[in-house]
Length: 248
Image 1 (cartoon, helix red, strand yellow):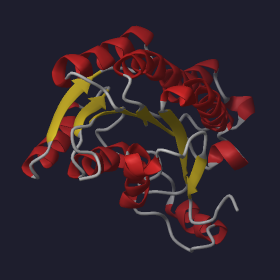
Image 2 (cartoon, rainbow, N blue to C red):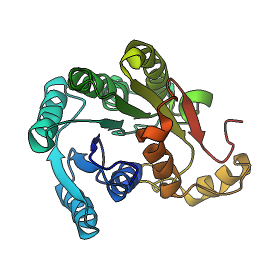
Image 3 (cartoon, rainbow, N blue to C red):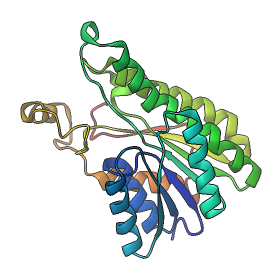
Image 4 (tube, one colour):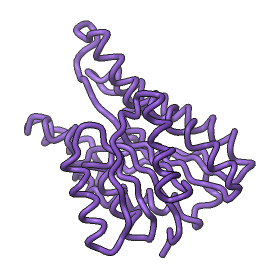
């Protein structure tokens, strides 16, 4: 198994991309902290799916946009499994509207959830990773929107672009201690953030995807598992698009 004896924390893991990543990490041997904010039933379903396959997982509630809550999440991971080897920052939200109509609260909640949470969790996890002296893997989920922008998503695009800059900076800070930091930039995938889009918009999106289809969630999860493994030990500071060619 690629991740035998590893411990992973996945934020926003009760659904969508986070769930797919949590389940694939567990399938490859990692013990997984399934973080959620407001969906305990969904998080319990992820844990049940993992344990049914012989894996180990624990659901932990934390609003990782809150600094202390993120600290407590990492402490719980350490108390539960004794170490942390992999951190996947996936928690995210949207509040889409054109800038003239965007409320300050729409900006703040998206930046806090999508970007500040990455700072919060990385700050909490970096010290135990460094102290253990066994390296580590940090994987931040950005978005193709953070690379190319999108009308009506100035807040979301800014947060995801911020994740990219943060990833590259942290990779330079932690690389000397064997901790890699990379970002994944997904394109269109069936998640709670995209299923609410009108069918006409979903159909229109296919015109901008060279591969002519939306992605399947495992296609992101496989990459996350690879980046979390020893096979990716010489890859850091990278932004890898999983977008069917949208940003090309």
